[in-house]
Length: 121
Image (cartoon, rainbow, N blue to C red):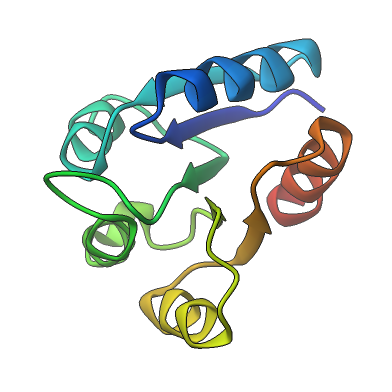
Protein backbone atom coordinates (compact mmCIF):
# COMPACT_ATOMS: atom_id res chain seq x y z
CA UNK A 1 0.00 0.00 0.00
CA UNK A 2 1.55 3.25 -1.12
CA UNK A 3 0.22 6.30 0.67
CA UNK A 4 0.55 10.01 0.10
CA UNK A 5 1.13 11.71 3.45
CA UNK A 6 1.27 15.37 4.45
CA UNK A 7 3.40 15.86 7.58
CA UNK A 8 3.21 19.23 9.37
CA UNK A 9 5.85 19.92 12.05
CA UNK A 10 7.90 22.99 12.93
CA UNK A 11 10.95 20.89 13.84
CA UNK A 12 13.30 20.27 10.90
CA UNK A 13 14.67 17.19 12.70
CA UNK A 14 11.17 15.78 13.12
CA UNK A 15 10.32 16.48 9.46
CA UNK A 16 13.53 14.70 8.42
CA UNK A 17 12.67 11.71 10.66
CA UNK A 18 9.12 11.56 9.28
CA UNK A 19 10.37 11.87 5.71
CA UNK A 20 12.79 8.98 6.28
CA UNK A 21 10.17 6.78 8.00
CA UNK A 22 7.56 7.47 5.30
CA UNK A 23 9.85 7.09 2.29
CA UNK A 24 11.36 3.90 3.75
CA UNK A 25 7.82 2.48 3.86
CA UNK A 26 7.30 3.42 0.20
CA UNK A 27 5.03 6.36 1.02
CA UNK A 28 5.20 9.76 -0.65
CA UNK A 29 5.92 12.42 1.97
CA UNK A 30 4.96 16.09 1.64
CA UNK A 31 6.34 18.30 4.40
CA UNK A 32 5.17 21.60 5.90
CA UNK A 33 6.62 23.79 8.66
CA UNK A 34 3.45 24.92 10.45
CA UNK A 35 -0.33 25.02 10.07
CA UNK A 36 -0.38 27.92 7.60
CA UNK A 37 2.29 26.31 5.42
CA UNK A 38 0.41 23.01 5.77
CA UNK A 39 -2.75 24.57 4.31
CA UNK A 40 -0.72 26.07 1.45
CA UNK A 41 0.84 22.69 0.62
CA UNK A 42 -2.51 20.92 1.00
CA UNK A 43 -4.12 23.09 -1.71
CA UNK A 44 -2.18 21.16 -4.37
CA UNK A 45 -2.52 17.71 -2.79
CA UNK A 46 -5.06 15.03 -2.06
CA UNK A 47 -3.19 13.09 0.64
CA UNK A 48 -4.38 9.78 2.07
CA UNK A 49 -3.39 10.85 5.60
CA UNK A 50 -2.22 14.02 7.37
CA UNK A 51 0.17 14.04 10.34
CA UNK A 52 0.36 17.21 12.42
CA UNK A 53 2.20 18.47 15.47
CA UNK A 54 0.25 20.55 18.01
CA UNK A 55 2.73 23.17 19.24
CA UNK A 56 3.80 25.24 16.21
CA UNK A 57 4.26 28.94 15.43
CA UNK A 58 1.82 30.97 13.26
CA UNK A 59 -0.93 28.30 13.36
CA UNK A 60 -0.92 25.41 15.83
CA UNK A 61 -2.18 21.90 15.23
CA UNK A 62 -5.67 22.60 16.57
CA UNK A 63 -6.11 25.57 14.21
CA UNK A 64 -4.76 23.48 11.35
CA UNK A 65 -7.13 20.56 12.06
CA UNK A 66 -10.10 22.96 12.29
CA UNK A 67 -9.14 24.61 8.98
CA UNK A 68 -8.77 21.23 7.23
CA UNK A 69 -12.09 19.95 8.61
CA UNK A 70 -13.85 23.18 7.52
CA UNK A 71 -13.02 22.38 3.88
CA UNK A 72 -15.47 19.77 2.45
CA UNK A 73 -12.94 18.23 0.04
CA UNK A 74 -10.55 17.49 2.94
CA UNK A 75 -13.14 16.58 5.58
CA UNK A 76 -12.65 12.81 5.23
CA UNK A 77 -8.83 12.74 5.26
CA UNK A 78 -7.62 10.99 8.43
CA UNK A 79 -5.48 13.23 10.65
CA UNK A 80 -2.97 11.81 13.12
CA UNK A 81 -1.60 14.13 15.79
CA UNK A 82 2.12 13.55 16.46
CA UNK A 83 3.24 15.44 19.55
CA UNK A 84 5.22 15.32 22.78
CA UNK A 85 1.97 16.13 24.61
CA UNK A 86 0.09 13.25 26.18
CA UNK A 87 -2.49 15.00 28.38
CA UNK A 88 -5.99 13.53 28.13
CA UNK A 89 -7.64 16.96 27.76
CA UNK A 90 -5.43 17.77 24.76
CA UNK A 91 -6.32 14.44 23.16
CA UNK A 92 -10.01 15.20 23.73
CA UNK A 93 -9.56 18.69 22.24
CA UNK A 94 -7.80 17.21 19.19
CA UNK A 95 -10.53 14.59 18.77
CA UNK A 96 -13.28 17.18 18.98
CA UNK A 97 -11.42 19.30 16.40
CA UNK A 98 -11.48 16.30 14.08
CA UNK A 99 -8.27 14.35 14.68
CA UNK A 100 -8.45 10.64 13.94
CA UNK A 101 -5.65 9.47 16.24
CA UNK A 102 -2.75 10.45 18.48
CA UNK A 103 0.89 9.37 18.48
CA UNK A 104 3.35 10.55 21.14
CA UNK A 105 6.92 11.55 20.19
CA UNK A 106 9.44 10.10 19.96
CA UNK A 107 7.67 7.76 17.56
CA UNK A 108 8.53 4.22 16.50
CA UNK A 109 8.69 4.32 12.65
CA UNK A 110 7.15 0.83 12.31
CA UNK A 111 4.23 1.75 14.60
CA UNK A 112 3.72 5.02 12.74
CA UNK A 113 3.58 3.22 9.39
CA UNK A 114 1.13 0.68 10.82
CA UNK A 115 -1.08 3.46 12.24
CA UNK A 116 -1.07 5.28 8.88
CA UNK A 117 -2.04 2.10 7.05
CA UNK A 118 -4.85 1.47 9.55
CA UNK A 119 -6.42 4.93 9.33
CA UNK A 120 -5.98 5.15 5.54
CA UNK A 121 -7.78 1.81 5.27
